[in-house]
Image (cartoon, rainbow, N blue to C red):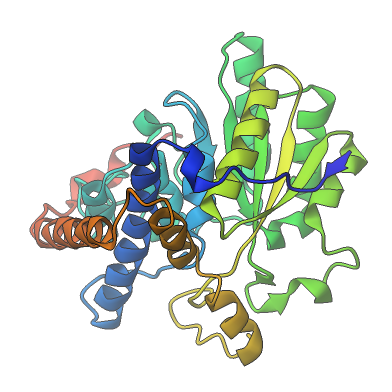
Length: 330
């Protein structure tokens, strides 16, 4: 039931504007996360953060394979998923500053990003909590005969939770249109995957439930996109779920105060040398019709957009006491 990654089409076979759009999205995520990191370090922004620097290609590659009416579920590390799914920089920045104009009216914060109008359920901070939810959403689509797919993001640590097994089994036995996307960054918090799994190839788990799994270079946005396109097409056609294991690496701590001392120096250096943005830029420049000037212009434009969002978010309205009783269901 398991497949190895197929050859990814070279960048030269893609439309130029599509590629530049992918590049803009992964750079947007990196620049957004870097700016947020410094806002927290300065004490300007409240709360806490779990960031995704280094994992940009997973979110962008998968979401680029979805239609606008498809859905995603996310985790407490959801900034990149939100930006990749189409949420705006402003609504995310407002949310991080706790403003009522945020994507969740300032009530979700960093760990619960989402916008139902954009097809993203607010992030679920419980490890593996989004997996049975995604299966349930996919069941609803199937019962309603709606040709929609759910992409369910989770980390390698979620595979050890009972919710993972229950959710993927339900999706398998009912042939549900859900793509399970495991962002395997090798660490569940500070614990290396090899300390908790005898077989650390997570895509092998799919065979136990009777559906297809595939391991993909999660730092190659085109490889991720190609694998996601295949998986989404299969699920949409009624062939059931697919498990994509995307091998990646976070360049930052598990959370705000984590210095990553548990990551060996040689491991970090090896993965940093495979940075998804640097690699994709090299692929684009090799085409001949995309220049460094094009890429620099994208970055400069994004920096301006993020700066403007910060200024506006700092002036955005804050919740009042009456907001405590709104959006509450008993």
